[in-house]
Image (cartoon, rainbow, N blue to C red):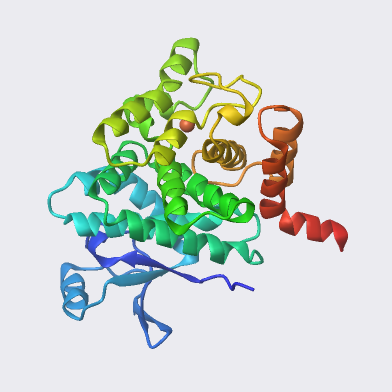
Length: 323
Ligand SMILES: [Fe+2]
């Protein structure tokens, strides 16, 4: 059984002295977390230099302080990613490290879920692979800088998409990477949607819905012209809003006309949207979300994919009922 990490790594290069939130920081030596600075003392440029000189790449914060760190990252992601001060390696590391932190949010009980470890490894492999692909990293940077919520959502969708694939099909390593790349960039087209629409708290009007619904096609067209993504990744970006009963968009495809990986990403997308709000907080419980997808969205998703989703995300609920 996985034990929950009590500390979260933060890439030292992404920490700006003085403006970084005032939380206790730890360093890891010989497998132990040692307090470096307590709450109430600034993290100075001198600290930064000293740690860098000592070859420290990551500093650790308590999991309990992650809300504060997330708020800070959210407020500063755009500026940090657009600055010339950070090397592209540092930006990649920042994305990588931020990514890992959000993976466990897709599970109800990360303490108990053995799948969390698997998902972390899948995402780690994906991010490792992506770090060598400049175009993919830049695309992800654009998403993160434009809208942090979309970035967090994309990570959760990619995690779940990979997990469902690994449970349902036996894909090769490179196929998994293609699927993961497509899933993590599935909403890339949202960089063309104004922030006022993406962040609007209430219901969108007809015009806003039309603009939002352009994102699969716009993302697909833009990235297709770049010529770096595989057909599988591109299909996910273009077709993740298609539904088995033909009610989806942009093409209104049905059943097997929708590529398998796009169907899985669609399932993961809706599940994550139902269970997590814009701030990344858990809203609807897993079993209610699956029930909703099965009954109120009847015909939209392949039943076998909903069964797999249920098995993965409702594991603890099912066990509790049996006990
Ligand atoms: Fe989407």
